[in-house]
Length: 70
Image 1 (cartoon, rainbow, N blue to C red):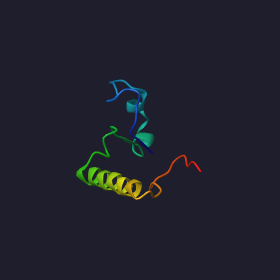
Image 2: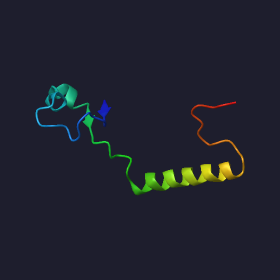
Image 3: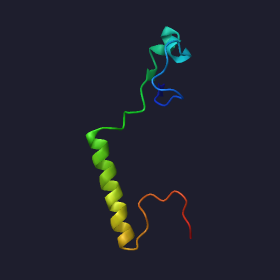
């Protein structure tokens, strides 16, 4: 199991997730929500945004439509 988003970051001392039993803790990864902030991910996001901008200028559909309106 992996968790990367918490109500309070970093997890405060004594938080129940930090007190998991060993057999669960050994199969669990607790990380801050910064895993996506790398040069590679920022480069990918910029490329995606610019690609969508080009699509919009051409009057084409967005590359990632969430709520399509017809």
